[in-house]
Length: 86
Image (tube, rainbow, N blue to C red; front, side, top):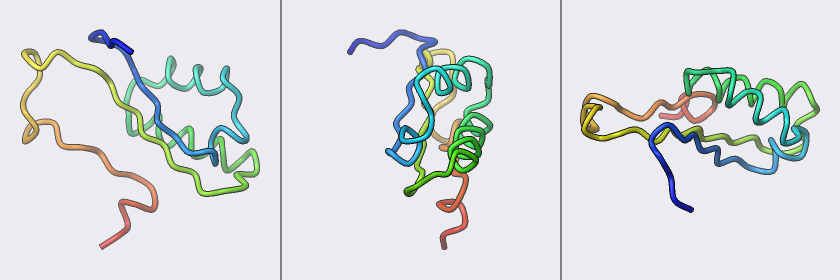
């Protein structure tokens, strides 16, 4: 799959897709601009839907590296249970 600047990708476990349909996933990805907020909302919705399994979500936005800082300026955002790990 070829990506273009501005594309947004979701990588998630079946803990999210078992209870959220494609429309719900798309709505969150389209409506929630901040990646961290989008991940939190997806996990929240999956839990509200009964989340029968572990729920893992990664939201990644494809950006133009020339316009953004390097890894030191744009560190990954870790939320949820993974953020609480030592």
